[in-house]
View 1: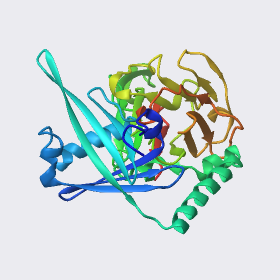
View 2: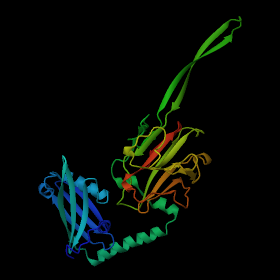
View 3: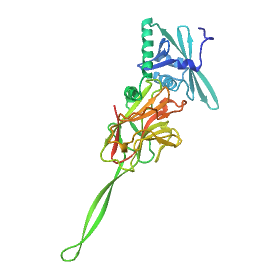
View 4: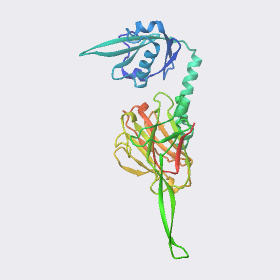
Length: 360
């Protein structure tokens, strides 16, 4: 296939799985076609970085961050875009980066040639059969199977996965390397006077100090979102710890939020970009504010142990589960234009008797 006949549209980019690895003094780039399983690879050495990027990058780490950002965002960012071109035994990655100088801008072109790796027919056929078998098996999965066979996000991230505070008021109390959260508590001391008459009919007084505790609402998200180019079914499991009964006024919500870094929450999630499951009453809330019943609730069950958040990254579907209580339908179908890596699990908690941990 010549360059003129090459397919450089977005469909070609979506046909390949691109893998990037940063090793000492070089970047390893690989690509695999989802259907044909054709594999392409190349290496970028440290001493060629400056020339390839026309001086925009002088270290492997800088170029790696640029390519990884494009890969995570389907080939487009505010300042750069990535396209693929097929040429006989090569796969060409073309990157265009726009840099603004005052009132003018300039485009910098980068080109990376990946050579075809000749796999024997048996290896390629085995890979195709394995992937097709997985897809067929997933069609037969029940809702319960999807939860049980999903990949835990904490395992896919392979880095430090923990909670982070997002509330603009009182921060949550974090422990266990920030993998356990609870509401911040405040202790109040009140002096009470008691009056009584003794045997001589004289007024006697005594004092008593009463200690009471109150809690503030806490809101956290995880420090990583879901992965767009990884396993189809991804799950985050939260473990609940109880120190007392659930009160009528307690609040415990779990859900997904889009781009939490741009929001500051005070007393409730923002009105847009959140999909919420109310664990206490079993209902779900849409970004519009509308609610509907979804599943059993914490108040109607004995103390549950786990809350699962399941995301189908291919079809943008979201479900929740309390222990083994699995519904046969999805809670939400998210907008298709939302980027998977901008979706973060969140917890809103207002209870003195509950703490929540991320399960390894």
